[in-house]
Length: 115
Image (cartoon, rainbow, N blue to C red; front, side, top):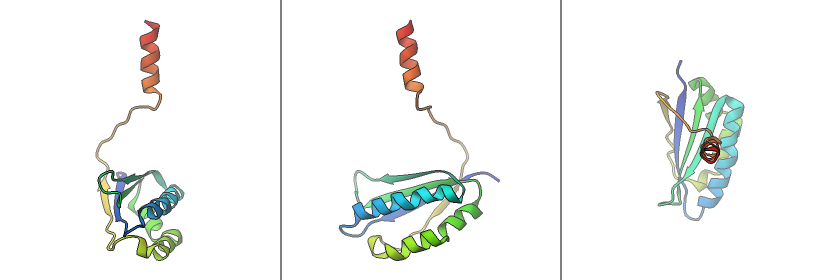
C-alpha cells in the first residue's frame, strides 16, 4: 500500500487565528504517535485565518486512528468555536517526492571554497 498525505484545511473564526495556530501545532505533533512519518502546518501569508495541516501516513487506518483518537476528538470539542465547519480532510496518495538535504547548501559552499 502506498503512503498517503492528508490535507486538512482549517479556517479560523474572528480573532482566533493565533490561538488556533498554537492549538494545531500541539495536536499536529501527536500524529507521529499514530504512525505519521511527518507532519506540517502552514499558515497563509495572504489570509492569516487560513491554515493547512498535512501529515504523511503509511496506512489510511493509522490516519483514521489519529483523527478519531481521544486527543483529536477532545481538540475538536475544546476548540469548536475557533474554526469554521465543516472541516473536510482529503487523503492523497503519494506518487512522487523529493527534497534537498538540510546540509546540502553548506556542502556546496564548502566545495566551492576548496577549489
